[in-house]
Image (cartoon, rainbow, N blue to C red; front, side):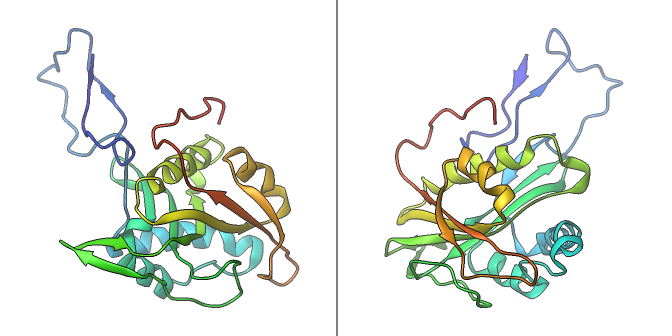
Length: 219
């Protein structure tokens, strides 16, 4: 028997199982946190985000895609364009995005660009703009488990439900191009963004269609 712990189609925990018969023994300790859940990030998650990002990127490129101040800025200004995967309350993977007002990505330290109005504390996008996916990262103890592709799929499905968003852009190293192509991204060519000794390809994803499209089970 399973218990559904959330109604949201994309920002929800997985199903959790109970013993056969659906009865939890009195001696079994109840967990106060869901086994697994997806939700938008908040400024309170910034330290955990930055620690995962720093471990994943500094050893490779020597710097993080986002500084701690930038993480705090994005999670304060546009938390609805972030998504975190939590297991028993601990962040294991995340994506941070923001609005981008140009056709191609550029090498600038940026602040979120959003033509929005606020209705009942919810951002409503008033122009069709692309989303810049700044970083996707998985905790070192949760890698090689398919979590990156699962999180990316959920994030792209979630973006379909956000009014005014039609494209997602990101840059990645050449060896990661197949990973993003499998998720539906198309290669746009070499990126203007560079890091010493590294070059990047710019990728684009067109947001559209049904939000409940079935995910490829092989991802």
